[in-house]
Length: 411
Image (cartoon, rainbow, N blue to C red; front, side, top):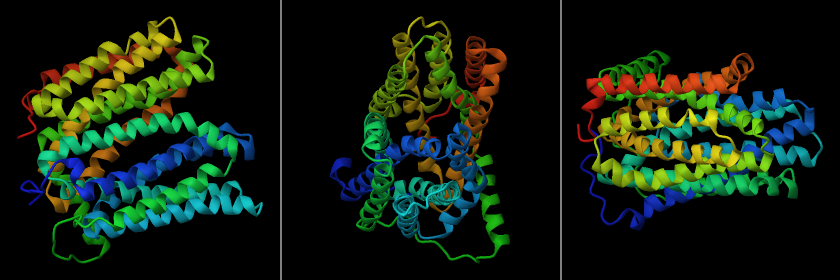
């Protein structure tokens, strides 16, 4: 079974292995934050095409959708720690080829596309292994605190990364890529120093493709037999449609209010601050309130807040709406992830995590892909109200669902 009876001593911050896991992740994430802005700017500088920049940014989501279920089955079969270390070494090596090629004047779009796809595959494997390993690093009673801490630090770093990314690119086009390559290697070193096993002992299984497909099926079957996780995952995927469409929509709404690029960035920074606050509040609230109540409250809070995007008369009020809406979801996400990780058997965590993430990523990808066309057809105000109505339907569905209403983190 899983790690429900783990008894690692002491407060979370005194746990050596958790500090190493968090530290390596944050260093790597800072590198990703710098590169996330630098990559489209580099593509536009090379080609003058925003379309190619968009395609390149979307490749990782496409790779996840194609490879996610397989990655979950593989990390349940492989040694998770070894997998994560080699993924970081691989991502660092592939990323390093960008500044090296630029130094010799040979950098072009084929290489950038290849690096994006290869790093997308490794990122998918790493993410599945990382989520599956966490319950073996910290005791189940500390999962809400661990997830809340990771979320808070990640959101804080997202704000910092957004603030310094432009400056880093201005210093040197290749600096963000060089820094990111080094950050991956630092993360690998941090993982190597962790003493705790990332998984429980398991029997070896045959390596044939047929068995691998069977493994994926077993993970999906287990997920389908868990009504709480299944229902909330479907609601999350449906909410992801709105989330994916919302990114471009908010940019267009801000521009409609004559916001300059700095002010548009402030709107998203406000959302990051709201998410940071929610992550800090999440552990205590996740322990105090039932999982179902948090889910229903989150959906109603989003449904009630979202229409204000359409009527905000200034960009700074738009920032206030973004802050408010972004505060609630981390609380629910910590509660749901803590529950799912605690009840899922260790040998199935990779497959279950990947299945849920593939579902929610797919919803967000559909929303992102359709957002431009929907804005052109309907206009920003109409689309905002339609998405608010969609959120209202989801909130009603959650409220009327006995499975959701009665869900508790201790079930």
